[in-house]
Image 1 (tube, rainbow, N blue to C red):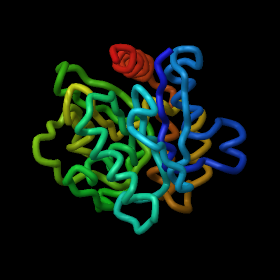
Image 2 (image 1 turned 60 degrees about the horizontal axis):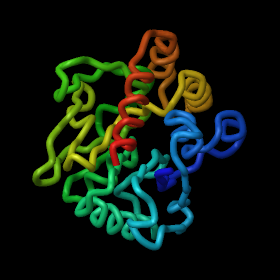
Image 3 (image 1 turned 135 degrees about the vertical axis):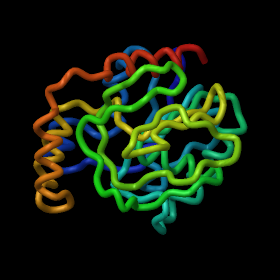
Image 4 (image 1 turned 30 degrees about the horizontal axis):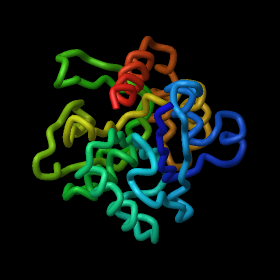
Length: 227
């Protein structure tokens, strides 16, 4: 069975972590517990693989941290990402993973003056010409692409919402691994604190709409199955 390494860059923790699991759990649930052999590396705690060859494919998770913040684990993570980008190992970064991949490979990430993008957002898939509705939860954005990278997804709020580096290396700003239940709980926890009440309320009202999560889960599973 093919092995997927999950680079955990943040923690849910607390009651939400107990109810919905940690970020690696969400990816395992999305792809299917029996689809691959999964290994989690808590890079946020300084736990790193010995080599990119330890797993057949890699996922870089979301995080509450900023890619531009000063943490001891970020430089070695960037070095690991650069090694992955030079290899043919299938690699996917989501949200923070999307941002840290761009930064590691020469792009730029900032805390956007557009504020929080939360709830379902609609993205244009530039590779298929279709539109996708996916859950977002971020205020940081990639604002400069690395050399040679191409944009795969965009929206008015997030112009660089998906990036492809090669056939084996890609990233996505929204969260196909999140479910409406987790997003609802997270919004309610941060409403009126980190996130303005009006912004949270609009996102909460739209959580029951049809979406593209099942399609993107199948697509990401197929991406790793082709390894």
